[in-house]
Length: 306
Image (cartoon, rainbow, N blue to C red; front, side, top):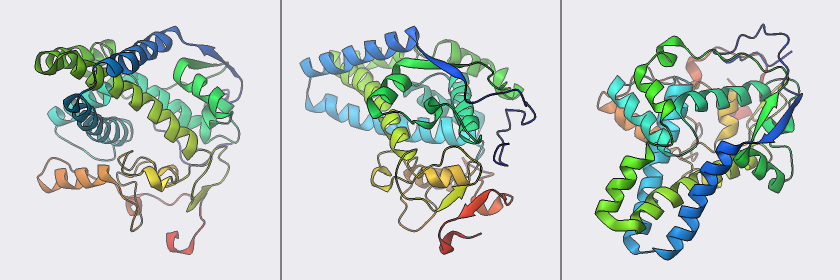
């Protein structure tokens, strides 16, 4: 039995699917990709440091994390928490690809598999971030899991058959190249090393750090009964994560476009989305009070009761 909320891409009646039994194996593509970015980002950046390169790193990292990972990949493509014009959707998801974690289809499948596993009564420690930090780091950054009986994930045809998304998926690593060429022409190798290598490295490693912490410690307002893994709010990195670190809120209301739900829970992604809505570029925004009640969701604080 799993918690009542079910991912729309996974048929909850797949009774033979198993979130526990599987093997974590080295992933050659991850090793090559992350290893190459580490070489460019650590060695290359150390040899080419300059104020302009560091400024580019800070600005472009913030832009890809906010517009791309948070607004494009997570809140829009994966959860459909709001709607946007197709040209803007493509642009936001492209920025999400530039973060360096994967293409649109790969990100959907990775997210949905972890989300599904965490909501089962028990799951493999790979999904729970249940190992010591150094082992979990190796697992998440350089390995992949192969479940013996994984669930079938059916990406909606409107996305799966979209030619733009299909191209993004096939070329997700190569999409760094036009930006790298532009950076080289504008600022030389320093801009390439900092704007591509260091940015991708810090985004990948930062994604792992927040995921590890948010599934192991932090404040909680909600408890999801019958779920193997609970999310935790990690407020001290809310600005750096564009609001994504309010992970207990997200476990409670996965479809919500707003992640910082209480006063003082800063959510830069929500601020930008609100601005887009004011100028007519975002609509059909989903909020917690629009979602149906879930019997497995229990409030841990009186102020959060629905």
